[in-house]
Image 1 (cartoon, helix red, strand yellow):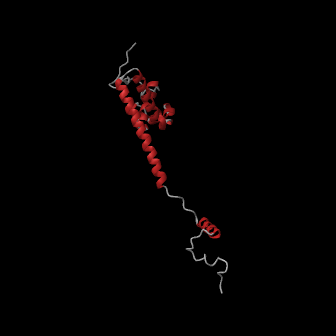
Image 2 (tube, rainbow, N blue to C red):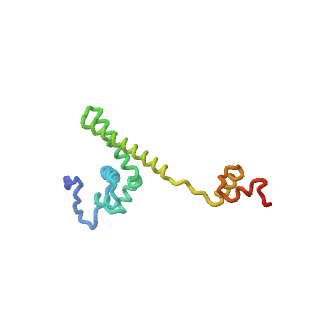
Image 3 (tube, helix red, strand yellow):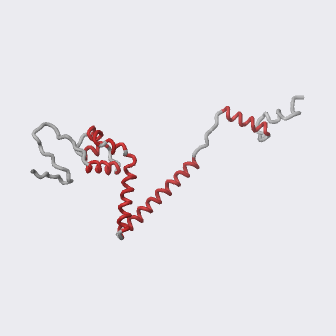
Length: 165
């Protein structure tokens, strides 16, 4: 049995089988993990396809479920890193303890920044302007209830006894 050769990056070297074209792509678990990590790093589909030595349609065909979960891959990757760091810190690894502390501080800073940004957005948000009919209805209600500030011309005309002489 012939031993398979690998290139510098650990990918198997494709040997010519005497037939035209490239051999059929095989979706291995290693390739699936590679796609997940590259998605977590924000790579485009085109770039991932080139890294796997396959075409874009092949990538979409074999790795559809991984590509579909693109939005959550970074969070999954960060969660995995956190869990590995916690395991190492629990075993007494001092470097992992420092790294865990840095990860917690970074997470706390991110949460605080998000809360401040949300508060600023709420404060700077313009109140919705009402339409003409709603403004006229509100002005009429104020006038009838006596809350009007007297700045309009109708206030004196609507009080009893203030009619024409």
